[in-house]
Image 1 (spheres, rainbow, N blue to C red):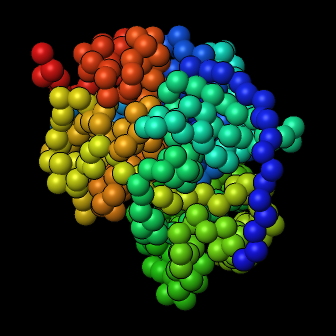
Image 2: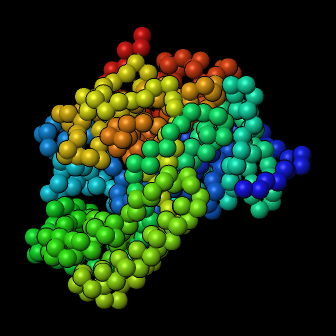
Image 3: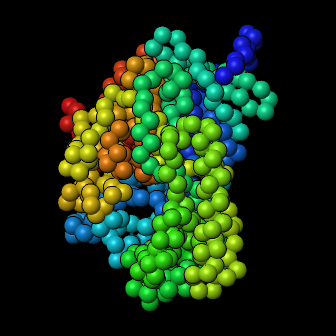
Length: 460
């Protein structure tokens, strides 16, 4: 490969207290918490909207509750705070189903929450503006300014050119770990998940899909809730197409298509996920470009399959797709603590935990025992070797099976509130680094922010 050498240039800069890179699932809540904590906050996002994978990558948000049904224990809403405030606001705007109970497969997730993509994006942007977050949309974080063990700025590129976004505390919520990697943090690239493009399909009736699965003996999960202004409607359905016809099952498997969908609108499937396993990590640009094409090719095949298979769907059409591939993991960033699977499954709680969580995406094979929860420790978000950088969301937790819990959307939301709250406190008290924050101050601030702790914190 040939190279060019960039000439030195003076780059205009902006100054903030807290800089959040990535306006996805965790980044939105990190920025909200930091701004509400009194910090002058910037949120850098490469797209023209925020919301990330929670808005465009999956079928539902898992889970604000403990897994109460299969264990016959008390039902507890364990993720609260800003994430639950956002959901209530979204529900009032008609943009989500609210919390609804899963039928037939409660051992996977007892709670179903379906969201409308566009309502999610708009509501999140409104809350960011109300909180005073300077949201830098259509802006890429391309490099960092590092001074010793600290980051002092993130170099960005937008249509108006390069800028240096300077700050005191930084939160990497990019999903890909771009800021952490460019700052010299240690990381691995496990490439242990498929990548996804999720499409919305119009001209299909979820009631007919539900009946088709049920009458074929293929239905194994559904949920009821509000849809198009009517209560107690089918809003989620999932089934095994191979039980309908083995050839159908093979076609679905070849396409990487998931049989689950959700909706809060008549005649519209909000999410149909198409998966593709890349040979290399999605941080590889050229391989990712090929994967983008392959997923869109598969979407066309999947549409034809839906048209031929689901009753009344002959005129179905693709109404939306994600603007880019959504990932479950790219870089895994080395942090001060790497939470292991056994502690998750056994419901471990920590003297520095920042929220409680009770969902595992591999249920019922793997579950938090007894319908309990585990706590996420503060030190699990602290990027090793850097004094003022948090990593949140899918970038933490190296073990695949443990990551199948911590990476999920609601966990990422709660992680965002925790990191943003901590960042604002570090600024407020002019601390030399994020490890110097006394845990009691963080705990008290999180409790004031309505974060629920499912176990007593023995920090005193």
